[in-house]
Length: 260
Ligand SMILES: C[S@@+](CC[C@H](N)C(=O)[O-])C[C@H]1O[C@@H](n2cnc3c(N)ncnc32)[C@H](O)[C@@H]1O
Image 1 (cartoon, helix red, strand yellow):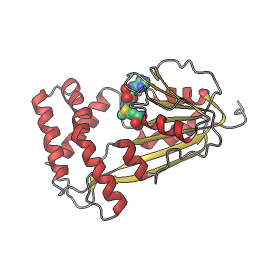
Image 2 (cartoon, rainbow, N blue to C red; image 1 turned 180 degrees about the vertical axis):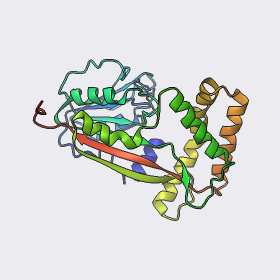
Image 3 (cartoon, rainbow, N blue to C red; image 1 turned 90 degrees about the vertical axis):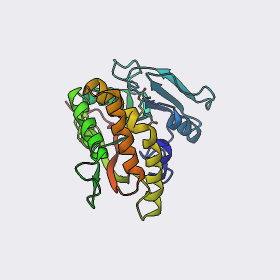
């Protein structure tokens, strides 16, 4: 659902970075592998590798697509100067040391190769006060951010372009997309995205919230589940008009090595 939602957001574009005739592509933390599979179909002459901690990817995939179990936070064993494109999406709760992670991506890219990232912030806002202080949805986000800060996984989406520049990337752009949480927007495309977002929250509020609230913040399972359920009910009610920012960030490894 998230993949589909982002395809609508990007008008069907899988690869925003202006790569030409790529030979080697990496998708870090590939999840179901859906981006890697689609990109393998898009570039049949490229080899697309998807890595993840969990081997949950399907085995019936394009012949130029393969998956490996790998921890992106370990030292990378990929050759230096190898990939034309490295893709990284929705790893906000996965990576602790972002500068190190981005540094390893930089090393693995060919000179002239591109990085493409997509992450969102965890600041849900409404323009019409439809997220009142007592809102359980608001509480969900407050608790999420408290827990994330406590265990060293703070929100980094808005900082990524700066991190790419610090790592040596050039031609860095960060494009924010404001997406609605629910099908309340008048704009047809945003309405459709909002509908997918709502469908996603059916499971994602619990998937992202339960462990944080119980294991990190000490709430009981019942308390945490009640917050997730009520938050989802608020979203479904259509009374809440909330949105947040999703950032697409790209950057290019310079063709010439950086001067020391
Ligand atoms: C929210 S999913 C995103 C999946 C995919 N990137 C997408 O956008 O469709 C996050 C994925 O990162 C993986 N992950 C978490 N920590 C990781 C790590 N240290 N190394 C590799 N993968 C990791 C998880 O197993 C999960 O599949």
